[in-house]
Image (tube, rainbow, N blue to C red; front, side, top):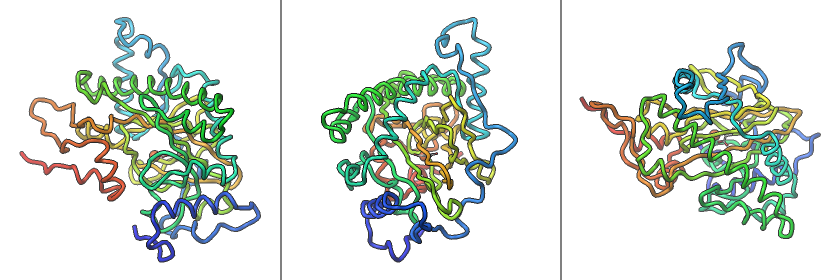
Amino acid sequence: MAIAAEHKGMSAFMLQSVASKQINNFRCDQKLPAEFVWDENERPTVRHDQYLDEEIPLIDLNGILSAVESDDCAISHEKLTADMVAACKEWGVFQVINHGIPPEVVERARSQGRKLFSLSLDEKLKVQRQPQSITGYGATRMANFFRSLMWSESFTMRASPNSNICDYGNMLWPNESQEFCEAFEDYDHKLRSLAMKITKLLFEGLGKMPEQNEVFNDFWGSLHMNHYPPCPQPLQTMGLAAHTDSSCLTIMQQGTIGGLQVMRGGKWVSVKPHPSAFVIQVGDMLQVLTNGKLKSTLHRAVVNESSSRLSIVYFFTPDPLTTVVPLTLSKNEKPLYKPLSWKEYLNVKAKCFMGALDHYTLPITN
Ligand SMILES: O=C(O)CCC(=O)C(=O)O
Ligand SMILES: [Fe+2]
């Protein structure tokens, strides 16, 4: 993953600024600027709307979320948790419906997201992501690992329990931030509760419920939005390059326009949008917590020529300072990973990107 000559010496911060400027000043009669053209062997070969006949697992949470403790639901509950684990193992991704989050909550957040990205570049740059920060506006943070620029802009906020949602609302719309603040705070609280439930169901599916562990009591969240404007040559560029998320769990709302692709059996598979579903993916921290029983999902986003696309991503992560260790060890099972904190892991990921987990992997001994 070399950085092209023209970008050599540019910090991630400068790369972000170059990408954001180009995307925001782009006119639809122009050709794709050269900085965004990817090498032929790295370009998407599967279109955003080219789907497999076989569907990505769709899991119906109806009744189960409120009936986690009820005996009546014991069998379906067991089946559900087993289905979730199987989906993670076989696909690395699944979608959930009947998740209990009202459509108007999703639509309010999406509408505020669209409003944010439709601001002028100067207004968005008021909340530009600063070099050492993970929150704010800019191009993707992984920009400096790639030769070419990505066709997207993004915006990140910390969510509860340490939210800066309203601070950003006030910076963007000093006298009228209430709608932004309420929409995302509501979305945050509902997603946090869903993420906690799904995480517990996955641990149950693996036969372990480590609720006593401090990681389980201290999850943090962040809200991240990606905007992919229509692109004149979508198959020559990338919306977001292949990566795994550093989170435990990622819950994504991709609206009605597809673009998310996951790697399955060496092939890229497009995740077909389901109108009311959330997409669930395993992140690096859940791989560590489950001692590799669930693997973080390699995924990317591709763009298209006609529609702008907005994805809202909720990252459910450990408290940055809590020690994360494998929690699902059976009697003779050895830990595959060294203890780490999420804060330290993010620093390693910022330097080693996809090599970050290797940094913490222990040699297998008998
Ligand atoms: O927008 C998408 O489809 C993917 C987003 C994503 O993977 C991310 O923000 O980490
Ligand atoms: Fe991701």
